[in-house]
Image 1 (cartoon, rainbow, N blue to C red):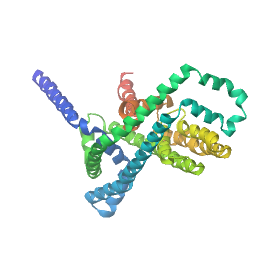
Image 2 (tube, rainbow, N blue to C red):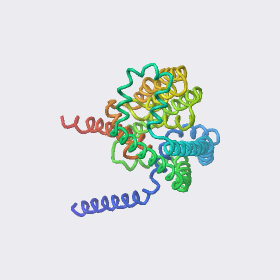
Image 3 (cartoon, rainbow, N blue to C red):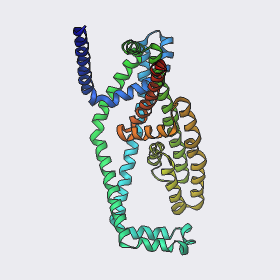
Image 4 (cartoon, helix red, strand yellow):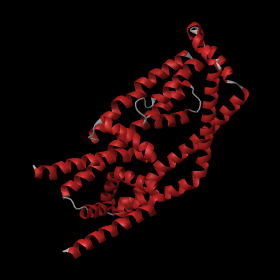
Length: 355
């Protein structure tokens, strides 16, 4: 009996050691692998459809992988290149502007805006504060940080271009095998986990529903918001509309203000620098269309797939983004929904037997 315990502990330790070693080996590729797993869960119904038509899981996985490459990866790569080009243009224009102008020149331009002139008496204390030395220092430090941030991001993009190409290759290879061998992988996982099959299925179902809810509720609505934002920005004549719409996409994941972090300042800019009616149009467009997705559509879709309190979902999403980057948008909610599912199983299987 003692020998069996020693063997069990030794075998468990051996498994943990090699699991840790395997995980350490895969760490350089963990981001594209995680993306392939998430994308595989979302796209798997399409693979099942083609598998039924083609009668071959290999051909179906190959076809779906080609579709993802052609219609998702290539368009996203093109958009990324265009956005970086616009970011470079914006950075160059900012540098040239602040080489030739002081912040007081910018304030004078704001004073001359048609919408501001009528309220100069009320705004005079504000403009007087902007003439102080402490305000000048704050502006100078902020501008230096912004320009340095933009320069670093542009430089890092070109540095990471080769790595991103390799990541795309890793993603496609992993994605193909997840589609082709997904059922076998899940069956193996179910057999290896020492829990009731009902509980294992419940956990895997929770992970799947959470991934779908995040994709459709968060990523999907953010994508629609960015498209609506691009239409609105282009309609009023804002330069670099693609860059601002991409920033709107990422801002959509930052509660509580979401996409309004981008479109509202641009609406104020349109109000002061373009025309009164263009500014009013963008305010109405942003409030009624862009932010409506934040306030109505997104919570409705996410709540149907993620059964955890909103405050927990809030910290799971933001914490995931801060800790893991964009992939954390999925990992954070998945971790917490799985944890809640384990709590339910513990209450059902263990606590109920002790009472």
